Amino acid sequence: MKPEAQPASERPRVSHGSSVWTTFKKQKAFQFFVLAGMLFLLVFSYGPMVGILMAFKDYRIVDGVGGIFTSEWIGMRHFKDFVTDYNFETLVKNTLILSFLKLFFSFPVPILFAIMLNEMRSQVFKRIVQTVSYLPHFISWVVVTGILYAFFSTDVGIINDMLMQLGIIDKPLDLLTDPNYFWGLAVASSIWKEAGWWTIIFLASIAGLDPSLYEAAEIDGATRLQRIRHVTVPGIKGSIIVVLILSLGNILGGGLVGSNFEQSFLLGNPLNSDTSQIVQTYAFNVGLAQGRFAFATAIDFIQSVIALTLILSSNYIAKKVSGSSLF
Amino acid sequence: MRRKRTTEDRVLDSLNYVALALIGLCTFYPFYYILILSFNQGTDTAFGGIYLWPRAFTLDNYTYIFNDGKWSSAFVVTLARTVVGAGLTVLFTCLVAYGLSQKGLLFSRFYFIFFIVAMNFSGGLITYYVLLKGLGLLNTFGVYVIPSMLNLFFLMVAISFFREIPAEIGESARIDGAKELQIFFTIILPVSSPLIATMALFMGAGQWNSWLDSAYFVQNDDLRTMSYRMIQIINQSMIPTDNASGQYAAMRQVTGFSVQVTAMVISVAPIVCVYPFLQKYFVKGIMLGSVKG
Image (cartoon, rainbow over all chains, first blue to last red; front, side):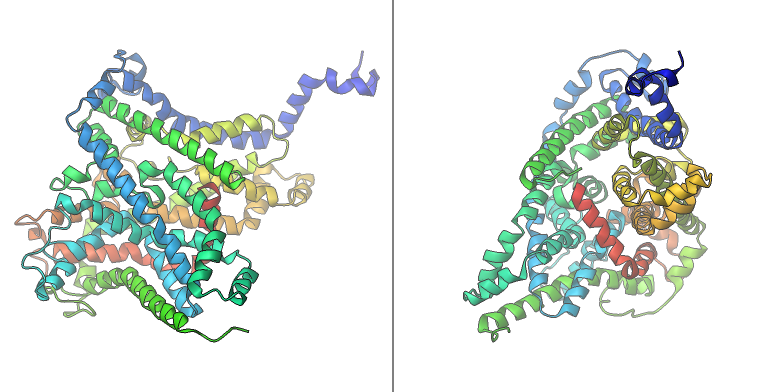
């Protein structure tokens, strides 16, 4: 029986399988574009995920990619090795301290800065300061490290030079190589680089507030500070909470200002490694510099799992709080 | 009608002016400082005390960098990866997004899960290195531009952008018998210029500033980037040794440090130059970013 002879109502059910095929054929160009993207991810994103297998294996780089599958299973040995590594405690301690210090000190800065900019009467002045403040976001950590060197080094650093000229210190401060200064240097430089950038979000949030709220507060006799406390801050509370939760999600990467890896890597050196070495850079170094690929992968894997848990839970909470999807 | 300014207003305003001026200065001065040092003789800089303008003006630092084979090739490589890398990412990401943005696309739920998993979980740098080695990408120019061809964040942004484009725009071309790829290039991309500008800008800045790949995925000296050369020179000088600047001694008044600041200026200059004109795109970028976090 030919399909045309069937009652119209039955047609879709009968031809279901072939209708998927016809739709697919009609979409074949789009399907092809998407498949190209998936193929790409299969290689560059899912490929490394499969590579995690070697964390549980006795893998050596000379075995090549195939070696990931053929090398011998050794269970959790690399994980045990890491936990009992003589560096383990220092690494975990440094990672946590750097992360929490950054979260604690860098988080309030963009909020405060946004309020200050918002209170500025001169629009021209406000624009200039704001524009300058987020310029550092676009330069690399390599250049920032170079700038820090130009300012704080013992031989050419302008700060040491000035302090000596003024007679405040007799010999240059080892700001870049003394382990005691690393955390301060890292936190301050990350604020310098990223705070202006994150101010944009809070400024936009303030700009979205209803001007009549300020007028009402003014009529009620609220002073400037009271208006900031009772109108501006409560008005942007939503954005503050969402950004805070998301920074918590990325806390091991450095929170809002990020860049734990870059800083530890570029500002760290053999002299300050007692405080500058963190888990991320340690994994990278033992992996690529010492060739202990499987061991480093095990460390990477622990980190990925922790990071994923943090990100998913913070996204989940932020979604609950803000009531809107974050994806 | 605003009421009269109170004493509180005046005090707050003055404090605010001073504080913001200081913040602005602290951000701006480091850039200015490396700029004046790059125009000062390296040997003179070593005496210190330069704050506002070059004391012994010279172009030697720039001449040195552009005549030094290592630096000039690093500059060319950096420029090439920026242009090629940003271009490839924009094209490929938009193409995949265009496919995903189609209404009624079969299996789209599965596709989205596939992309979101990739977005949130990574195998880590070490397995990534093993993969690059396996693919034979190590030590090639491709390692700079191929693995970054698909940007998942901008993929999501592009999908929502393409969904806003009225379907009729492509429809008439389709009736005229145009192929989808042709429609993508001749119709979709041209109407998406704000999206493309934002993407190209962020990808370009990322490529220009990138350093880890040049330091670890490449050994061939001809493929090193500006960032790598800067790391090299900073590392040399960070821990003082006796002959750190020995290699420059023969060369006029140039020192390791003066070459370093000059390279920094060259690396920052393009960003500062395009920055004022493209600010609105930067700002657009972060507002997109804030949606995702």
